[in-house]
Amino acid sequence: LYSIYIILIVCIFSACSSPKKLVFRDDFSKGKLSQKWDIVNGDWSVNNACLSGSRTSADWGIILSRKKLPENYLLTFSALSDAAANLFEIIANLKGEKFFGIMQNQLEEAIKLEDRSLFSPENRIKEKTLVCTTGNIWQLPEINYPNSREWLHWKILRTGNHIYIWINDEDVISFTDKIDLLNTKGKFGFIISGKVQIKNIHLYSLKKEEALPPQNFEGRPLVWRMFLFGG
Image 1 (cartoon, rainbow, N blue to C red):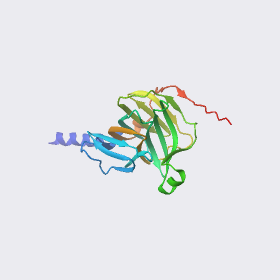
Image 2: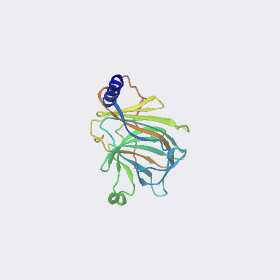
Image 3: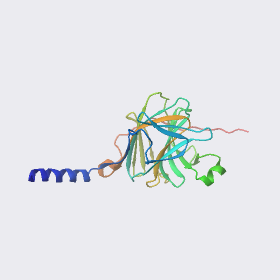
Image 4: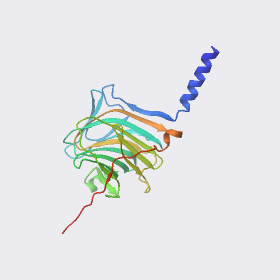
């Protein structure tokens, strides 16, 4: 009995001191949308253990998790966007109207990071849209990324003022925030301009060595687009 007691104490201590703690999970196995989510716009449902979302004729399809992000976190999930969807976007660190947008832009075949806003009901009429880039336009990094009709497996790591993103275990893009875009905590969610399926969402709170920036992260070459305006 004493040996069992010691083993239990060691297991409890190890669990409490773990540098990575699962704080949110949804595998959509119950066949319906749980109370973990708030639908902002569009049609969202659960089918075949996947979250299925689509836009309305008027605007984006948008869904938000009710769970706030930890200060340092790892968010993982898999997503499959319809070929007709120009944009699939991850909402990160939504606080008030502002959030950090991580876009899969299928129209430009790119992964883009942007300073975005999800407008309140009062401002949506004035802005004539639900979501828009509202700061640092063309100043944040992006990479070329070919469209895929296969599932993409995303990993998004936030540690301090750094964001690191992997797709299908490839180093893809990173960002060091020197202009306070990464709000402390805030919510996460998803945006789609067409149709998307999402599955196996896991959110981990990180501390100690798990919250340190990864070593030897390379990422794809950055692209800086230039826009010329003429009269």
